[in-house]
Image (cartoon, rainbow, N blue to C red; front, side, top):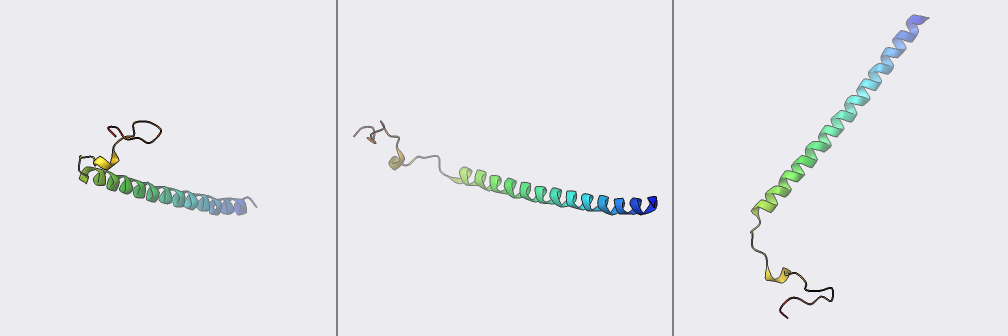
Length: 69
């Protein structure tokens, strides 16, 4: 009788271990995708020119008036 329970517990342990490995594998994959995306974003920012277009000037007040106009 006790031998039956021991064998069943081993199978349950294996399933828990497999599900844990699956969760870890998924988490690692998502982490890698996030890191690659962040790296691409940094490359995009580094390749942009440092000059700001005049069309994107800041607004003087909440009414939408641009400075100097």
